[in-house]
Length: 423
Ligand code: FAD
Image 1 (cartoon, helix red, strand yellow):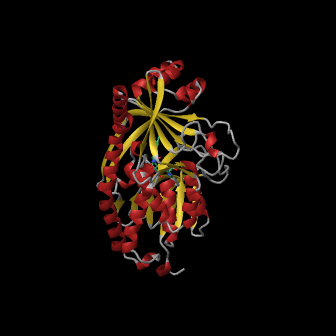
Image 2 (cartoon, rainbow, N blue to C red):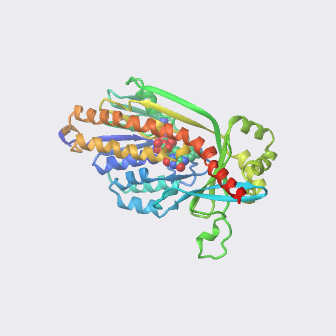
Image 3 (cartoon, rainbow, N blue to C red):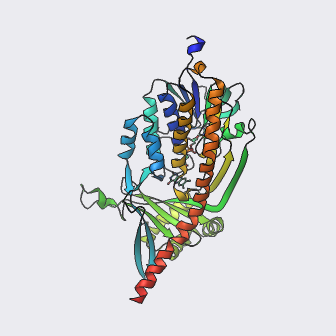
């Protein structure tokens, strides 16, 4: 191929939800796309999701849905839609006297909902869509270890091919890759961001909050009626369930199989206390999260607490997100946030839509040499400055919403309780 006809080569680092969507947007625009992912293909049964014992459920909202809607792949949204559960409200759980109560708080007066989605399922749908595109190549088990954004070269630890593709962690050679544009979507501990910092005067701020999280499961019930899916849920499937506590909380999000993925958020000192005496976990739940031990057997509570990791929560703000016309970071790599606003992935997917809207404005041809370097650099610079304020605002809202979810949601309960007491 003549050099003037060279198509833009875009490499995407990280095949999580945000990297996969970025690859899809680039592929739709005719770029030669290569996706480099640290782990093996998550669609292989042997791949354990990063940081999680199994895939977790997330709240998908319009921000993320719109980014997928605009990907130019109508099948994608149909596929994702069919695997979601609409959540119309949050359900606050508590106890008054010895009695348990539930209080539903609608999200929207017009009945609009957010959606529970399995992160792995969403990621798989994106990878399947990419797989069907002739201009996309995957490189799994490839770890970004270095990048030169001036010479447009990246280095990866990679398998020689002697070890099986699905054997995580066997990377016994270094490979050098040339690119026109590198999109870093490699998560909160991004190597792309680390290397970008050597080229850009990047402001960077990170904060670990003093709360850890641990995953539990409310199992599906045996169905009373084989055709009635609803009957396999122990509690309402159309709510995001919250057991608030002043300093901590427990939440549950439904899965299609009738189970709920649950998360305990707790200050590290409380985790330490319970780690010293795991048998006290059910008592802790009975005291603070009334009703949960009737949904999760006490022995299962102890098993999940002792076997599942107790993971930290990090909030990262940085900027700018790009270097010249050769590199840009998106998703958690650019703005990891605490999960209390349910917007981390949604905001990352939105990054992709916004990034490509700036690229589309300035770059009209997929033929690399037909666009000038200054056009490309201008698009990335505009993206960086436009997106930074929004991303920082969502980070702040996410931190603030922790107070809202674990404490403020209780206020209406107090009002309700008072009202009941006055009757
Ligand atoms: P990641 O999902 O972290 O993916 C990054 C990818 O890059 C990974 O596949 C990784 O293997 C790969 N990688 C890393 N390093 C390298 C390297 N050196 N070379 C190559 N590849 C690399 N968000 C929501 O929108 N709604 C929610 O309800 C929600 N709930 C959450 C609940 C919890 C408990 C947590 C922890 C997070 C939650 N989030 C939620 C946030 C959401 O999970 C993240 O924002 C989202 O996963 C970010 O996607 P990403 O693709 O940017 O990064």
